[in-house]
Image (cartoon, rainbow over all chains, first blue to last red; front, side, top):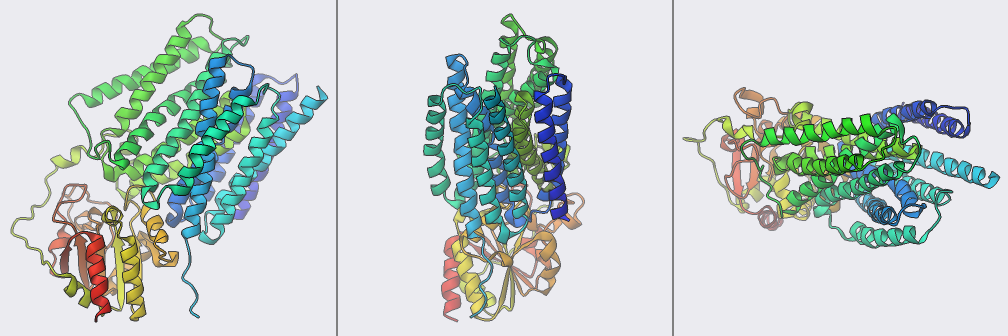
Length: 127
Length: 474
């Protein structure tokens, strides 16, 4: 069931992302078109996330928090653009701070999640 | 021009791949044995997204990006590698702050940027920008306060003062009012300084809200707060995606928001609080006013480690109930040793974990996993609650309110209706506790006065070490 939903969600996200790309490049499209698609993306991702995450056992709730935190540090992507784009210097500097803050979460978040998950072991089979 | 289009296409493909990796990675977390590989996949997705972004045609200089990446890695890597598992609640709380900081800075930068763009951001983007900055800013200070409370440099007690709710409401309404005004006046692009000033004041008010939101919340309510901040950080990241028209941010933020939202609901259910009650804070305050059953005339039975060892050593079926006290005493390794000893003697040991035991969702599981307790020995409330009546000894370790039978049988009790572990059904109960202090709810626990209950006073770690030594000598 989860597999099915995941596939559905991934497919929907794929369609949504590709559609929005073409909508953004097509000169004739209006502003609203792209943003309607963004709302689709949000709803589908939230729905998929909801379906999957309700199935995460309480056992793994702390790694789950660390993991979603690391994933949402994808705001690094937005920070990178602000640090590197042609903007006033103070904006670039804000970008540097944002890149650093998000990188802390990306690097630290994935490392610590892995450290935690490494600890969860089953009872060893009796020899 | 063609190059730019191919570049843009490559970026989108990288983002799609990353989205799929994130979703599949989270799916891995639904089972302990697939979790690790799942998260490694998600990490690959992250790298993919970053590489894709570096090809963005807007980027003209890389030196600033490199500085940020190096500084961030230099702080993040040691934090990831060295933070002890016992400090995990603080680590999670502070990471929400970093995430929110990045998002808020992006929000401010984008707002300033749109002043130079003809036509301005438009209504939808302005709504997203404002939301992003509002929620980002309050998550920065809220998470920092949560971090302070967990780390111990801000008092863990609820801080309240007269007129608090009124002031909070005023600040909140002020921030929301400015937000709405900004959307109404700045969507078409602002020219004067009024927009900048309003945006600045809104951000400052949001920073204040973060402080006042977490200040009145006590230590034991931290699982809810940390989950809620997790959700806010995610929603702010998602709003960033709307503001800059970036789908990967929308997807990742939505996933984070969903997880925080689900955890907040689970935690508030486990505390028998409505979600609204949690959202609008101010909990922990009114409880003290409710009078609970007095302990007068009741006596407890105190036993020594030697007595406890006799009972535990010959028990066939033991359920251990860990709570925050175990985390404070860092007794998880001593617990594991005791559990192994009982098993060697032919007994069965299981751990019963209440959803809100500790300071964050899953706190006890992480600590016990660190001490090498196999995860198939750890059980949730629903899984194990029917098993207590068949167990010889229930060993309560620094847990209090989550075992209080008053939640079931005393409608006048402030915790009435909260799901509890049915410890009182066990053949006999041993409670390891430092003293007779009440739990967070500030009420007496009837469990301690039952005939079948014995109290073993002392620091959980040293008491358990004594018990282990005694059991070895049996």
